[in-house]
Amino acid sequence: MQTELKRILGQNEWSRRDIATLLDLSDPADEALLFQRAYEVKRQQVGTRVYFRGLIELSNVCIKNCYYCGIRRANPDVDRYTLSEEEVLDAAAFAHRSRYGSIVIQSGERTDESFIAFVEHLVRRIRESTNNELGITLSLGEQSESTYRRWQAAGAHRYLLRIETSNPGLYQTLHPQDHSFHVRLEALRTLYRLGYQVGTGVMIGLPGQTSEHLADDVAFFKEMDVAMIGMGPYIPHHGTPMNEAIPDWSARKEEQLRRALRMIAVVRIQLKDVNIASTTALQAIDPTGREMGLQAGANILMPNLTDTQYRTGYQLYDGKPCLDENATLCAGCLERRIAAIGETIGYGEWGVSPHYKKKKQSSSALSSGVSPSRSAVVSGSPL
Ligand code: SAH
Ligand code: SF4
Image (cartoon, rainbow, N blue to C red):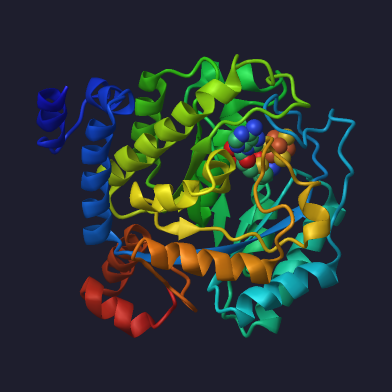
């Protein structure tokens, strides 16, 4: 395999088959070569500074019924909650004080006016109360263009919406008939057109997903020209229709983690200068999963800021880690873990991906007629 692996790593362009071969690597020595290459690309393209996005799990109320997710509407065993304005502002203030640079507000999906207005108000209040210093990412599912516009006008500038899989047929097996792949794709396109920094991603190791599907996902990320990728292993949740879909989960979960790490490495090598999150789902399988993600090419972490009394209520999958660790404990623990792998933390910085910065600079240079580097200096924005 080493000869084939070296042949692939020696090429600039990879075919679908090449990517599938890398995703199927099983020898730890082969994997180590792949991770080394990914780390080298990371070091050159985005550096070894990790950026934090403090995660606020706003609500577990959801109108959707995704077959894989623990907080789906039809799960009767979930104690539903929505954080109060004060609780959200407190979490944002913690992030600001701790110099996290930015936060992510994530939630089950709701499209009613009171929710839309609540989020709009929250975003405004957070911007005001942090002197416009805290970056705000939203991850609140599929919404109308006018809702995305309202939230953007209030001060949100990034949006995370995973496509889950770029294969429409596979997507349909994971969702009820009334969840449309095309609606999700259109939502991503709208966010991009509106000028959000768009993040997307997929679950890795889904039932029925092949390595070729994942290779197509990599091509999809390139085509969508996204600024950020958030991917993690699919992990069963006991209260969902897909719970039994991966037989013998405990024997297979280690491979599920390794496959996710190989996907992170492949995406880093192929997409080079985007932000890639090392997600909590990696840590749900192995306590050091997020560090492994950073070593496979990721550069973003999302420390959980949600008050511990709500964390058990926001379980998308089984085995969610840190259910009883408050944000202060999380911060200390993360700092140690990051130092242990020889990386540093980008305190007080938004951590915009070089990919998005370059795009911004070249578009403003085109409209202003000055060179890209000069236009960035002139605009003086945190972008
Ligand atoms: N409701 C919003 C945001 C919350 S869900 C949305 O769906 O976009 C955030 C992400 O959690 C989803 O995009 C999905 O990729 C992930 N997720 C849900 N259930 C999961 C599971 N069982 N295993 C791994 N990831 C899961
Ligand atoms: Fe709701 Fe998101 Fe879970 Fe789907 S994945 S059920 S939209 S929270």
